[in-house]
Amino acid sequence: MGVTEAVIIRSRDNPQLKELRRLAQDNTGYRKAGRYWVEGDHLCRAALQRGLQPALAVFAESFWTPQNAALAATAARTLLVSDALFDELSGLPSPAKIGFVLDLPAPAEIQGQAATVILDRVQDAGNVGSILRRAGAFGFRQVLALKGTAALWSPKVLRAGMGAHFGLQLFEGLDLGAVEALTVPLVVTSSHQGELVQQLHLPQPCAWALGHEGQGVCQALMARASYFARIDQPGGEESLNVAAAAAICLYASVSQSR
Image 1 (cartoon, rainbow, N blue to C red):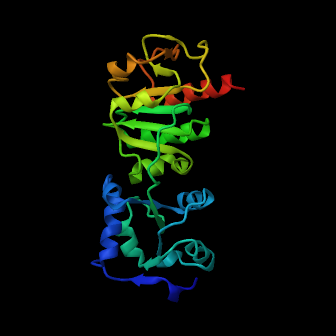
Image 2: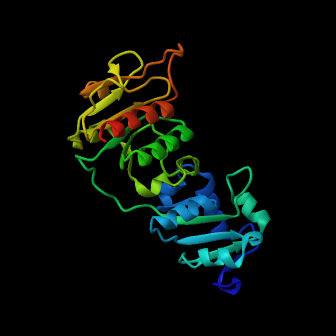
Image 3: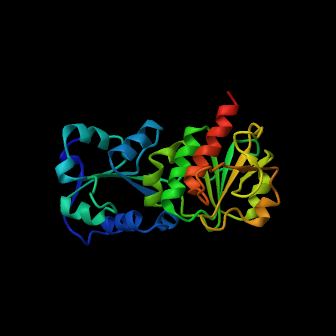
């Protein structure tokens, strides 16, 4: 694809650019649009590696090279904008000069027997993205996000997920009752009860519940738990960051399955 085949935008008031700003800067704008924005070479290439076709590719003029024009050929449409306009569009302190607009995955059904991560009101976007990345790394392909959890397809969560979204089955905005669709045992992390995670005989597969940064897992979800796992902290800290706890717990599961 050459430059003449890309739509060149030089006006800040262009309707397409306004829509892109909403996707790039509004954490929940994707819900109305049915599409989401990813920015940066790493995320764009990660999407392509998973077989996704961008609905739209957007490039800053300084980033338009023959090599990147080949990337544009993967998209249904391509926009080329000035660097200044891309900087205004971007949500990054150092704009990455390339972005894709991708369609949200088609609705799916919760798989009862799938290895699952449940997010119970985990509010920090960085934590949520990090947990998704760890879920993907350790083979937990299904994530159920209960109401109150940070928006899964928001730009901040996507950046923290580092491409993990593209290999996961994600459900968000769920009521607690959605957990009833799972037939695998539920394991709850707790800082004050249960067996040490390295000593707990973990069922395979299972569902790990990870809770709110301050309040932990809600009582209603704890009442459904089959197992409680505790992380030893000999250094004396009160608790671990939820994303760090997720890494330890999910790794404990995968290490026992080998």
